[in-house]
Amino acid sequence: MKASIPEMIRIGTIRTPYTETAPYQPVEEDNGDFRIVIEPEFRDGLKELSRFRYLYVIYHIHRVEKEVSMVISPSWTDGARVGVFASRSPVRPNPIGISIVRIRKIENNEIHTSGLDVFDGTPVLDIKPYVKDLDVKEDANYGWIDDLADREHLFLHIKGIPHDH
Image 1 (spheres, rainbow, N blue to C red):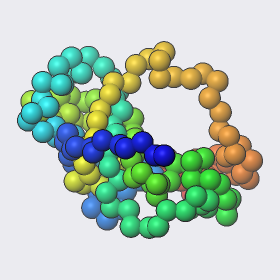
Image 2 (tube, helix red, strand yellow):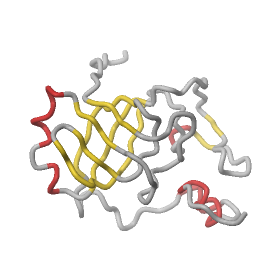
Image 3 (cartoon, rainbow, N blue to C red):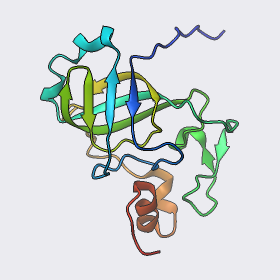
């Protein structure tokens, strides 16, 4: 028997310059206006957040129109097939995304951030501070990505870093 899941609420909206395409991952040096506008009733929840350098942004991937598949081939690979849970695909059973961004400044109910990898108008479900030592796993690895030919070149694509092909 499946447990019921409480309905999520929007606590804010992400503002980015992206309306038609967005990078695969946040690009910290990206130019443009990147902000998280928190709804007024949640503004007090921002108290002391400015003392952190980074935060997790948890959002609803609201513009995905593809059908979910449990086995996928990430676009940046040369046909590798992996389970959706072994990927960072935005096409998931629950369209929830997470990004880590730098806090540039907080003014009133707006968090100005480094580049975000989402479309303008994306609903925010939650934000959490990124805490040094708790959120860094020194022994993290690349899993199946280690098996790909030209892994370093693929990382440039994933990170949205301009380069010569």
